[in-house]
Image (cartoon, rainbow, N blue to C red; front, top):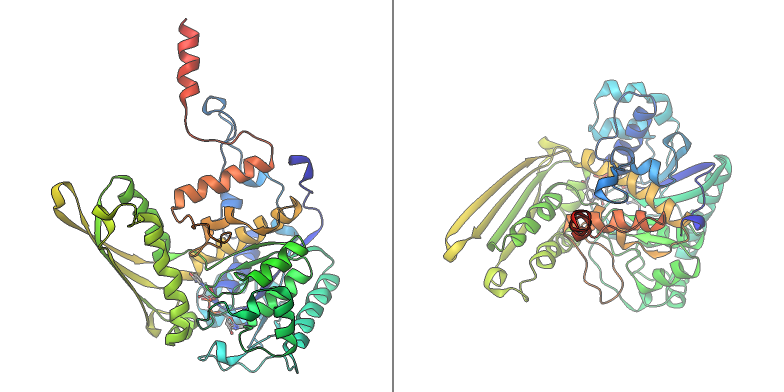
Length: 442
Ligand SMILES: NC(=O)c1ccc[n+]([C@@H]2O[C@H](COP(=O)([O-])OP(=O)(O)OC[C@H]3O[C@@H](n4cnc5c(N)ncnc54)[C@H](O)[C@@H]3O)[C@@H](O)[C@H]2O)c1
């Protein structure tokens, strides 16, 4: 496969619907890293190594030296929002990063001015932005987004584009007839079907142009047969849904450990307080429902109560998010986990994670953008399940259970990179080392 992977030449445009806390923290962070002011901590593409070959070979290159990724200096940013603030103003309002750091990259951030959003307030009731595109049909709206992308690509001399949705979480809705085929979807665009959400319009525009699309929110968006059909037609990679940060990141680290040691779980209660704009949007029950469904799926898939009823059949799982403005982006989460061990004796685990939501999300945006661009150059298209590592509610082929265990997800990601580079996959079986030893003694 290695020979098929095209090099990362020229500029890569990262286009982002939703220039809020996550997106501005990501963009400001990359600009700061480029100036040598900070390190891209949390980004596997920039900081992590990958083992190649046998353990005895001691080959552990950096991922960015192992696979051809776009260089940070070759990235240009663009995006859309329902507010007209440039990225410097939006980042200042988000209050995630300190003023000094933002000031050091002020010129770069001020130069990024959002394009008018494709927006429908029915999908995000708690936002009142007016910086939005006017349209007659949703088809017009999609065409305007396509034109924005083409203009951006030409104006910035980009060779390739990727799109990462960092917009608000939309209200909960399920697959309906208009999402079943591309023909029905395109008909729905012309008829202004209310089931076509704004995020779907951006995704449609991206896929039409062959631009990889990753979904950082739990919205349905590309998790529909119609848009997957389009991705297949245009040979375009997609990934989703919902960045795996904070509490769910902890869950997918701890739950596999409990399951690995055959410890039972009676209950897992998770609550959060969060005061940023995301928290405000999620304060609406219809928007929270989308997030809740995404967060709840994780434990069932890891514990599989139907396969192990003695340990997990009666597990009670509850997730709450409470909007609490004084904490801003500094989310605080509490988990109470009721577990049981030998002979059914009960124990408890308490976790109090004082995290920073956008600080955890920003490196995910970077890695998803760079890996999606790599996928495209490697000729991969459709659902990129190997990027589940970054996602709370990983998109999979129909009928395929998602893998939530972060360690299995990492193995899948690393093996995919080895596969791309024609290196042996690593199974961790390790018996060959002992066979070599036996052979050397004989
Ligand atoms: N921060 C995290 O840890 C985290 C984790 C998982 C998922 N997410 C999701 O990522 C998304 C972004 O989070 P955030 O904290 O940056 O939120 P935010 O509210 O700060 O930013 C979202 C931005 O999207 C804009 N927007 C909404 N609808 C839009 C549209 N149709 N077109 C263009 N812009 C639109 C809003 O005006 C806002 O500026 C949310 O959906 C959130 O649920 C965040």
